[in-house]
Image 1 (cartoon, helix red, strand yellow):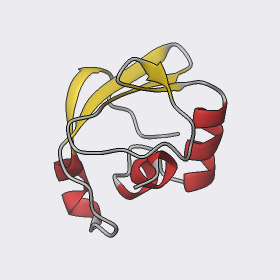
Image 2: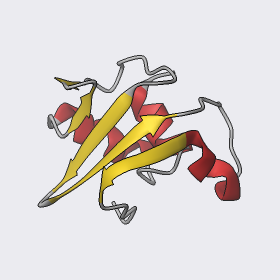
Image 3: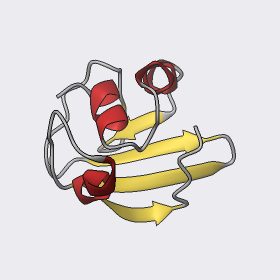
Length: 87
């Protein structure tokens, strides 16, 4: 699955366009490498997202095309940083 779509489906970032802009701006890192929006993600990858002066680090646990809002948190595990999804 594409990185920008995963960020939207998992509700880490609410809109896919915002996820795409974050990737294009170099604010999304997968496994210690800056990632493009089209980067394929897989289970076990570690994502780090920089939100201004905050960051969120999470491990991908599950990948699914469609997830209900209440089940979105089951797609990743927070490893560090703040979990704030107002972006």
